[in-house]
Image (cartoon, rainbow, N blue to C red; front, top):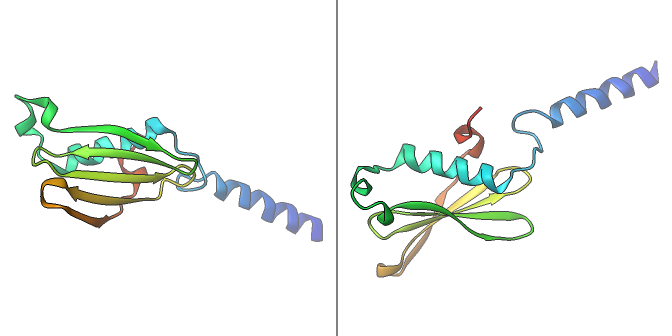
Length: 116
């Protein structure tokens, strides 16, 4: 009986670990796609139709634990998304170089912006 309970709990833990928001590794492509989808949903890209170089989303530096994804707005502001490779948890930092401003802007749930 004891072994059945242990096996059942182990099986349940394995199932929960593979859930959508579980410990699924995030690839660089997933991080880029999620941030790109977020930025296209949250920011007005109409201004970039005539000059697409003024707005973009691209990969930045990569560390052992996280990806950096960079959004550049037509205003000259940059939003840096730091995405945890294991969990997808992240933080956003907005910088405005011309005004010497740098501030934390919160987080997003990357999984909400990935194609299912």
